[in-house]
Image (cartoon, rainbow, N blue to C red):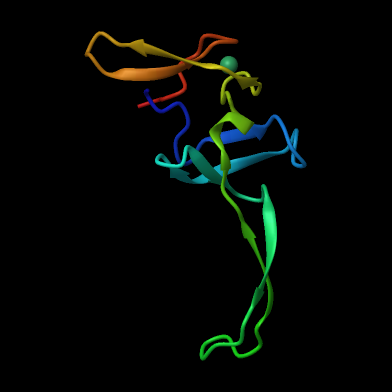
Length: 107
Ligand SMILES: [Zn+2]
């Protein structure tokens, strides 16, 4: 299956506690079919004091969430949308927005 969401994309959460929120994809985990989105699915972790961080304390970190829980936000029409694929004349495969038809992968 071709990858519909890539690092750097903006996505909108469609289910769970962060439903409706948007953020930038900072990491894609293809094997787990998950991704990490900035500011989304943030969990608090207790950090033990180490040599570099003597204070320890609580750190906040984004936990991965499933691809199926987000939709891509189209840069052209600014809506959460399904993604289609189109092959250009030069043979390259690009993603396009199924709502407005605009190509998402600009060169
Ligand atoms: Zn669009």
